[in-house]
Structure formats: C-alpha cells, structure tokens
Length: 314
Image (tube, rainbow, N blue to C red; front, side):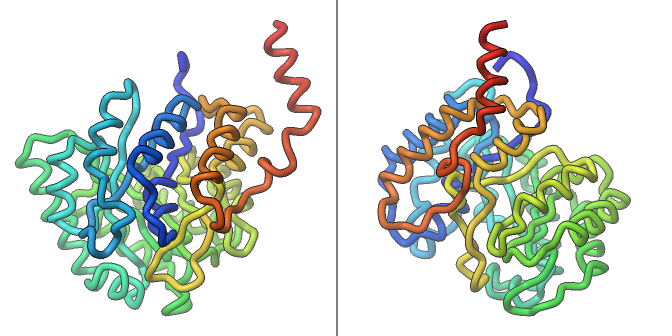
C-alpha cells in the first residue's frame, strides 16, 4: 500500500475471535489467515495472547505467529497480555504492541484477571517499568473493557471509566481505547464517553472496540468516528467474545467495517474483495461455528461496483 490509510482497522480474529471458539485451529491455518489478512492490506493485526496454554490452548502458539508476523514489512503486530509475566513474553517475542485489558467493572475485572481494577493499574506501572528497562519500543496500550456496561455487574459509572483512564495514563500507558465488551452501548453513549475521554487522554485515546451483540456495532463505530476516532478493532466474520463476560458475542465484522468506511469514501488501505475471499477461507476452517456479518452475504452494491470500475478505467 503506497499511501497511509486514513482509517486503521486492526484485525483481532486470531486472538479475540479464536479465544471464543473451543476448537484449536492448526498453526499453519493461523499463519495462512495472518498472511491473507496482510495481503488484503491490513497493517495492524492482533495475532494472539500470552496467557497460560492451560487456560487458552487456542492461543498457545502466539510466539510462532509473532515470529512470522515480524517477517511481513510494515505490519504492526499486537498481542494481548494479562499481567507482567505475559508482558515479559511479549517483549521477548519482539511484538510491536501489547494490549493490557483493564475492566471498569469490578465484577468483570475479578472474573477476567482475578484482580481489582486498581490492582491492574498497579500492574500497568510494573509493565511500563519492565518495558523501559528492557529498552524495547513495544507500545503499551490499555483497553478499557466493559466501559459501557457489564453482564456481571450491570451499570458501569462513566466517572469510574474516566478515573481509571486517568490512572492508567499516569501509570505509564502509551495509549488507551474504550471497549463495549458485551454489546450494551448505544451511539449516544459512545459519543458522550469518547468525547469525555478525549478531554482526559487527548491524542492518546486511539481505539474503539465494539461488539455487535445487539445489532448496534456499526452504529457505535460511526458514533466514535464522529468524535475523531480513526482506529477500530474488528474481527473477520464477526466472531469473538470474552470467556468471562456471559453473552458477549460477536465483534463487529472486519469486512463490514471496511465496507462502511469505503462506502463513505474513507480510505483503509484494505482490498475488500481480497478480504472477502479470506473470510470464505476462514469460514471453511471454522465450519460449524456461528459466523456473522452482512456484506459477505449481500455483496457490494452496484453503486460501489460502478465506482470501482471507473477508478480502474481512469
């Protein structure tokens, strides 16, 4: 891709997607998925998570995926880390970004990481110190989970979200994002919380992570886009969910997010046709699993097809 894309879509299917599926996808298929996503133009890919294999055997080969990803020019490789030990593994692997989730819901935080939110803030500080001592340039990103509500706790106070955002930035996070982990958010909520978070985080607020559990995923992407967010997590075929958040199904589908942006004339650097071919391939590997998304079923509208033809002819 010659030009820097205006919208960044980070593909998270190899981590967020596969962690929600019981089957263990063979490493060679994951490598093909990774290569296919890269060939389609995606330049940020979350390839796995450094968690104990006994907890998530689906992600036990994360180090192998990072090693392969590092051979792909211009690719920013992300991994999820739950704690300092996971961060040390990420630093050893050479990953470009490590994402540490912190939950604004006390109940979800205990279920997911076995720590209170403030204990996770302290872990952020330890990870930052470890990163700095190692001389690594790996970006430390904190994702604020359950920022819009929680299936375990219910209501999540926006003031608590903002308090924790300020705390993790003070602890040394390079950047932060807001996540609708269980698909509770509506566009008005999204717009309000992102606007309030920008006042605290400024340009360090860099990502929106939305689930389409209740059909509002793309509407929430649009609401975040309207506040100035230009980077979104998405999952091929709309799979994914948190094992410790009951009912948290279905990230926004990568192909639908890319289509949304292209339909409005916003560049992503992604070849949508190639992405849809990859989706078909992944669907074969995941036969029997519940997949989501709309554009793969409906196809591109004639208006967009005509635009493509005119662009090629020009």
